[in-house]
Image (cartoon, rainbow, N blue to C red; front, top):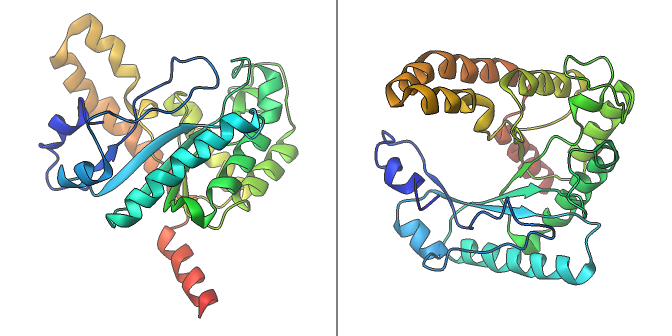
Amino acid sequence: DPEYGLPAAKRRNAAGLLLAYEQSCYDAAPPRMPLLYDHWSVRRVKEAGADCVKILLHYTPFERPEINDIKRAWTERIGDECRAHDIPFVLELLGYDLNGHEKSGAYAKLKPDVVAGSIEEFSKERYGVDLLKIEVPVQLGFIAGTQFFRGEPAYTRSEAREQLLRVASATSKPFVYLSAGVSNAEFIETLEFAGECGSRFNGVLCGRATWQDGVALYAQHGAKALEEWLGTRGCENIARVNRALQCAESWLELLDRATAHAS
């Protein structure tokens, strides 16, 4: 983000820079309308050294049509800006329950339809999206037999597999999974389950699944303790995620197939 991430990015050792363009509305009540930074544009994001623009959009196909029309037009404008300045556009889609009950079993059952409908819409060329960052459409906590099952099933393992495959087939664009704030262990099992199911995905773009356990340590013992944790446990968390990504498909292979099909 431009507020904290951009100053810190000056120490990134020549790595690529993906910069957010929208203000956070995580804590807002539904329908969580999107909002851009007042003093930023795609032109300015690129001038600041970004190699890619990232936008977070809270979206569900089950929202009122007039609300979703505003969100779609908002995304079209950003896509056009990115095209004009020749910079990749990453769209992160987060679904939500109309009443704010995202942690309920009822929403877990609906979530595959939310994810599938959202990525199907924003895969249209009118939006100019280059990479989709999406939620895993099923939640381990509602699948019996998983390590993190909470006791209330929303789908069987077989049904969950079908939903993973259905969502993957809803777009021809490359997409990566987000962790949705779950623990490292739960995210690893989720990725392994997606791999076992044969679901196509092109990697992950996640944060909290790697570093969130260090926050309490920082609060209790300060920056030095956090730095030591990041150098050990944090690195181990990332290594575990990387091992779980053996089943992911390179987006280059997807591009090669699309090019071959077009020719």
